[in-house]
Image 1 (cartoon, rainbow, N blue to C red):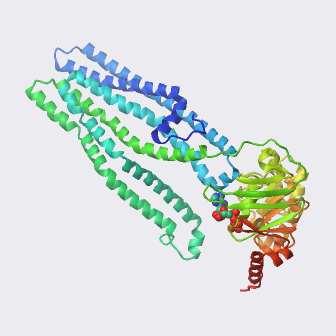
Image 2: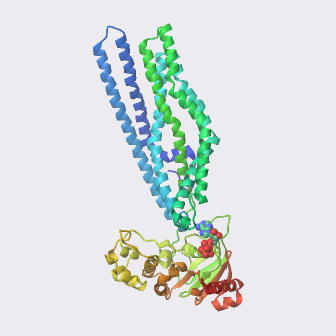
Image 3: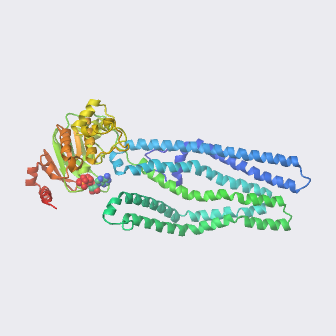
Length: 584
Ligand SMILES: Nc1ncnc2c1ncn2[C@@H]1O[C@H](COP(=O)(O)OP(=O)(O)OP(=O)(O)O)[C@@H](O)[C@H]1O
């Protein structure tokens, strides 16, 4: 399989490159498909000999019987070869699927974690499961079909030319037609249309999923499917695309289908003429009526191969976008340095080359202190947070903990150092106990102590099997606030010296606010903490507040200092106090 560093090929070339990794298996499958094609012709040829024998008395019954036996034997052998060819191509296909999935998994492990967050799990699942699965179709079916589709007509027509060149020439009409139509069907314009068509199917599917997810909001605001533009727009554009596709592809395809379906007529017309006026043998005429059009079926499968390939290539393109995307820089080997001071030094970062999101950001978070990040939406707070556990790598400057650049640190050591409390509460389908322990090397007493500190113990004990209750099993339900506290229990158990926390996680649920604040207090005690703040009142006591504005540090200090010195902070504080006095 190709090196991850080269630029990927595209279309059929890339498909063949992928298939090429199991060359021998596929060559075997192709060879067996050729043998199938050869043997599957024999019964027809024997029927011709039988007809010849019985139309020319005296009939040699022993010979006819021999022909019948050979015919049956050839038919059985042909099917055995077809089976073996399918087995070989399927074995190759499943091996390729396995390898690609392993490559994808290995690649995902090397990509920045932020890449996985950005491409939501649904998209990655689609690539790893559906797009790779489609390749099975190409390798296991399309390649043998292609071999059969070419070999069978060539062998058939080759043989027919040895019997009667005039009728054989007329039998070639469908092939000539296909040769003329294929370049028209698959010209650049149609290929582009085909790609647009598949993209429009995907857009529509995404629109459908969004529509279903957004149903409560849509209903509350009194909308329906038509007024939900993202849905209706996509359905409309799919409809327009199908109409255009039909308009463009129907004429050439229609011509081919109607000629190919009536291919018997010219053979029959010429055959009858030759039979009545040039003494053509009846057996020859029947042979051509059987074989002269019999090979057309395999041409039909060839004609649909093009559109199948386009669907598969589209999926492989998406797969390659992951397989060839830039990996995180080589893993560091350094162990954490002294202490847990966190330092951003002249950090510049953008998610892509075209747009800088953080510009020259410098600040220190001394060990054991709390720093709050505030600023308008989109100012870069979450981006700063994500750079600490190296979800992304900075383009310029350094992020260091205890004096060691996080890029130089051993990834496992960095992960030990930092707890990142996400906004999404992710629960695994396993017991509550394992959901807290998360594979960490901790004792049961430690797990329970963490659950108690996070104010989870009581509601866990009220569940049917306590800590051993399976999350996701029927009837097990936890409120949003309870799930947040489980998340805090995980972080407390991990006991990492650096904590990155999205304030929304800690305080978003008013009912649980008191309990969550208690858990939060236990979590951050004596830790180096960076908190992304959404409500200013909760962070006025922080040791330090960093005010972000359009990716730059606009102010730094304590609440009182910033009220004196930072105009943006003053405006934010005013807005906050006004909002608090707003009563419905
Ligand atoms: N994964 C991503 N890929 C590309 N751009 C991103 C990504 N995440 C954020 N951005 C962009 O980076 C900029 C800073 O976003 P960021 O989420 O850091 O801001 P924020 O201050 O945390 O905003 P909020 O308070 O709304 O969460 C925004 O313009 C945003 O559109």
